[in-house]
Length: 268
Ligand SMILES: CC(C)=CCC/C(C)=C/CC/C(C)=C/CC/C(C)=C/[C@@H]1[C@@H](COP(=O)(O)OP(=O)(O)O)[C@]1(C)CC/C=C(\C)CC/C=C(\C)CCC=C(C)C
Ligand SMILES: Nc1ncnc2c1ncn2[C@@H]1O[C@H](COP(=O)(O)OP(=O)(O)OP(=O)(O)O)[C@@H](O)[C@H]1O
Ligand SMILES: [Mn+2]
Image (spheres, rainbow, N blue to C red):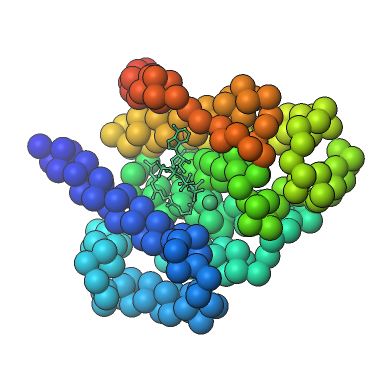
């Protein structure tokens, strides 16, 4: 049927956006990361502009070109993601949560803004467009905050601290505590607060899911459930995110799918 076809088109479009995001992230996180300069990111941005104007360089660009022709996707969040990669080239400390929030917007909140025009807002929804975008933004922020809390040790070994320095100081913690990586009561208390805040963003996002077009609801909810469980896994590791990777087991992962499916069905 027409709606079925629509679903296929949407899936392809989300895939094209995903591939572009992965490739953008790979520029600064991948094997060639040490050669990446601001100039390379400028070239990547020029290439983005070209594909938005219907001049793709390769087949992956072409998939995104096609997507932006079919769906009302704005170029700004894509540019903002590149801006986040620029930040990552020189910035390795965040003074306040506001600074961190901006970084999270650039590298992950943008994904929400890119995908909503593809996934669509439910015709039955009485929510404002703005509130749906805000929820999508919140999911990106929640995911990135969770990613940061999971990877504290890994990031520290690369000399990076993506935690607000002022909040660390308030908790009586220093940079060296992060580099030493010892789980203390101070650390546990600090982490509890950080986890609590990340959960607020997940809650905010969850409220928006019901307003997405019905076909898009359950995959979004599944990814939300899955990622949110990483926070539970950090707790289960007794807040040792220095040397233990918080991991959601296969059984829990699989269970997220029918749970999301059921919840999305109830909401529709
Ligand atoms: C259905 C669905 C979930 C669609 C989104 C698919 C999509 C386009 C994903 C792109 C993700 C990506 C590759 C972003 C590049 C930057 C990056 C790596 C961000 C981090 C993702 C996690 O990746 P990973 O754990 O592999 O990180 P490492 O580099 O390995 O450390 C992020 C943490 C953020 C990704 C952000 C999202 C998936 C936000 C999704 C938001 C929506 C789909 C909006 C939903 C709408 C409402 C109303 C709630
Ligand atoms: N079982 C899981 N528990 C928690 N998160 C998971 C799990 N499986 C996948 N993920 C998330 O999905 C992302 C991509 O999955 P993938 O299997 O490529 O991970 P990875 O290669 O181990 O991650 P990284 O790129 O950070 O080394 C992971 O970085 C992680 O955020
Ligand atoms: Mn990362």
